[in-house]
Image 1 (cartoon, chains in turn green, blue):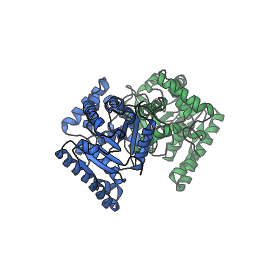
Image 2: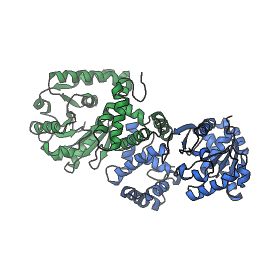
Image 3: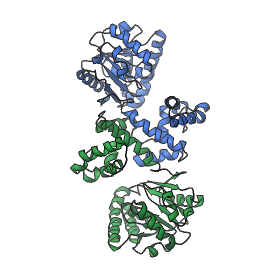
Image 4: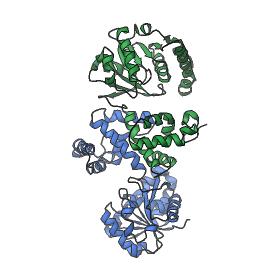
Length: 285
Length: 285
């Protein structure tokens, strides 16, 4: 079963719920924590909504197991209770450095000394948080992608203080819950996937902004030239144009600012957010 | 049939031969030119070698048609004779600006005034050549990718002097010979495909050079995260590591220089050139 058996997921948002589900499906003892009963109820609804999504991907024969996994997840809004006997705490709270540091400062005293802490942060580096954990040697990043159950990656990134044994225990945990572990040897903003994806998307945006080619043309070129199932603007639609806007508008360079303005004028102001709203660069039914 | 029926391909190298073959397969009257009888003989051998490659992709039922297409290609080492009645000249001579300009200066007087000229150059912009053609309004870039017959792209890029009608006639020609035309509205170094691919490959190289992750890890992340059939280092192997080295070593920035040195030390010096030599980042049988 592995030595990281009792898992607590902090934050029952979209990804937190998926992580809890995936862990439960693979036999872990899972607790999902959120801040109050209202948030927990929303979390419970998210967990239940995962079942049909999962079944659509994995097949009807796994419905009963998925329902059982969800039913077995313990929900708690009492942090001390939620983490009191955890082997591993996976933190998936909103992407605010202050909020995350405050959570870890509370965790530091509430969790057993040997509990391993992992942050699912997409945008922060674990070294920005490490000293707040009270256990920098047992702290690292374990980063999941949406649709956790789809034979997906878990990017694992420590700080210089992370104990290599702890790192390998988390690699083993990722495998145990059916993830493909992606081992990073150093801290890298964006991990591996976004370090590759962002330059591709920026280059595609540049071609459209400068008027070299239409989004559909760029996408067709990429699909034909590389055999990929989706071109950059199809990926933008999946990522979500509000997310793309938020990322670009936060960057100071003129190219990013121009792209943010393009997205706002042509899409956001028209309520076109990509796949989630039914229309972005393409229409979805 | 379209109005660009009589096609002369200049240079019967790998891509020149493929362009001639593809045009002949789609009913064009094709002449392949190369500088002397030795070069023409090599060109003839390349044309004949395309047939089994094409049949492997397109099916045995097309073998007779492919052999007939190759047999129908006229070979000439007399430039005046080769282009004297051409509607379209596709230039696929080696990537030297001086050489190409010299070729166009000869062509300018040898070809009929209304013949359209198209360069297949990957690395030069048509505006670097345009004034040597004697007909800047009937000159543009028509860029093919390896394995022309695989439902592949033809990137079409004019200069500010290119007549829009001529541009559209070349778009129509590309469709007539079974290509997916990629219309660029402005000159762009690297066209669309390499404008996207180079930043992705550079980012991947950076992750390996800085020790963040192994090539296999980077590739797995890309495949899983985007659904692409190949990761960046698999693409490097297909492009060829000598080509990748040549590109990186020609760039002055420290990252490119470091990547060129990495490729030389770890691969080129050991005779590992990628797929073509049987080994690169991966082994091929």
